[in-house]
Length: 121
Image (cartoon, rainbow, N blue to C red; front, side, top):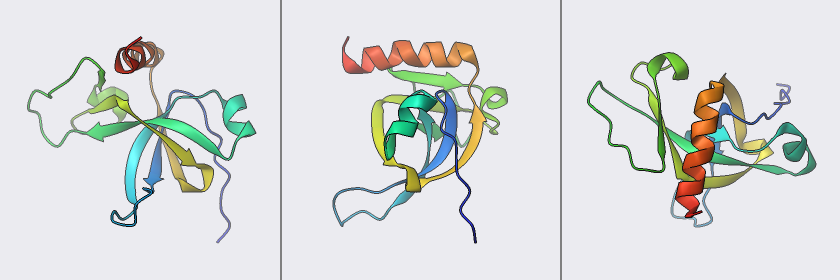
């Protein structure tokens, strides 16, 4: 089966495989938001992502000052997601599985502000 080349773009959500340094944890499939522009991603063998988490029900989500809530409509999910801006991962390109959707421009701007909060800037 031929592997399809994925073009990485800032503000797009991708399914990624997180592989941890320790041999204790198995690789995990997660969703993440690409934090870098396409030109930067093309220069390196990896790209940086903020992890996202899908909600499982309609309960009011717990959000910290470094989280971004994305509605079900904006996230193409049943209950919405949160972007966890204090969980940033460098992911090798061969561990990026597929493009899922693009965040609205307003959510990308909000994510940028929350990234600064997460970094203490």
